[in-house]
Image (cartoon, rainbow, N blue to C red; front, side, top):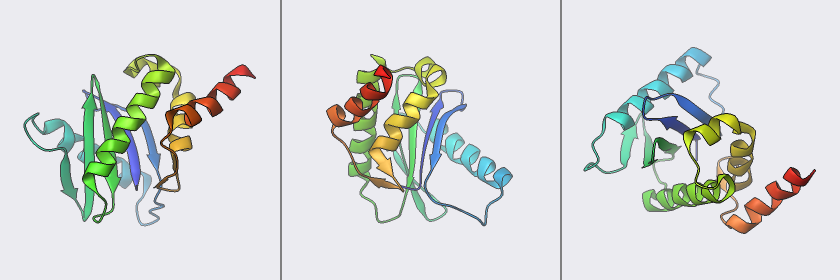
Length: 143
């Protein structure tokens, strides 16, 4: 996984996590690239597939309510596997936030990042068990 971006229907980024250090891109270029990817995903119709090519990478996205979950991956990555990962991420956030919505991400951004960070390390999916992910966050909530 190269990046995970959560955006609303208006294209405003609510969470972004990058796993590939692109020293050839300035901050402005990365923002422009992110905006271009988001625009391409938002413009696609519901009857179109959730995969697209972008500068040699695959962009895989899925819409849940008012949020788009957008992932950038290598060209060799399995699209269905990434869609399953997105679904697992949404289910985990649903269980933690009790039906996750855009406001939950905005008001508890650090918790959303913790969930993502427990599931993905250095661009590799390391945990998909919702109970394990939520248990570690529950320990932090108690302290």
